[in-house]
Length: 258
Image 1 (cartoon, rainbow, N blue to C red):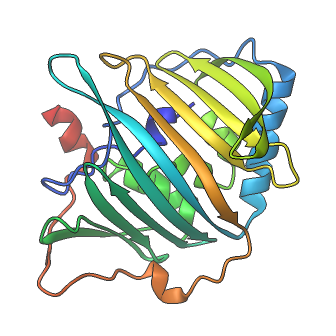
Image 2 (spheres, rainbow, N blue to C red):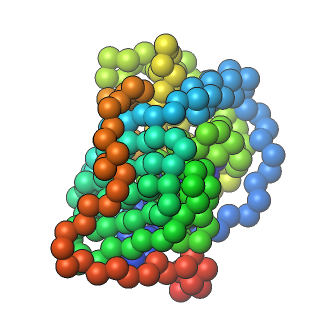
Image 3 (cartoon, rainbow, N blue to C red):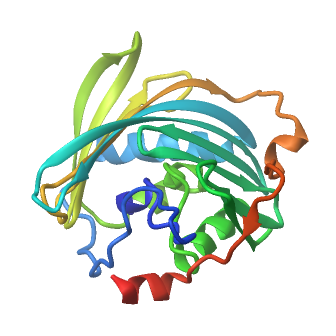
């Protein structure tokens, strides 16, 4: 799984950061020992999300921050997301370590931290999949939970999976959800998928086991809406007067600095 990219990496607008930096990974072995049921549930969820032309959701997030001493500190955040295919996305992140807003209007991406007088903006491809590939590969970050936004989320998440198992059905926030666990070389993750009729994620937990102290990231999803009324201006940047545009640091530069 490209799970390190579910949570945004280094944003590189000078002081702006948004989560864990994505680590360079060696090619993983082909998937093996993944149960047929677990694989089918993941494919079905991917097909359901990928077939939707628009949706919104809310996510309550808990994540670890590891101090140089090795101590893990836990923080909370919430995310509001609105998507319209082929080329519109808005993400609002509100958390203990700061807030972020991300806009994509089919022509450009814009990232803003309300705690600073700066914002970053860059031209982007005309569809969401290509845009996500560009911001990850060239700009060095991704919006949180972005793997779920691809037309083919299955392809985005299963690449580094080595093991997978179906753990059965449990209840999350009153919803019956199928629990699946997957393991990879650098990342382990568990996802709960609503048993229907909407095959949507109920919860996601990621363990970054290649990083010191193995920090975790978890998201509980609510308020999925596949027929939202989203006004067009939602996807256009709304910036206060006087903020200064500054460049993104290219991903290659960020990697060299690390």
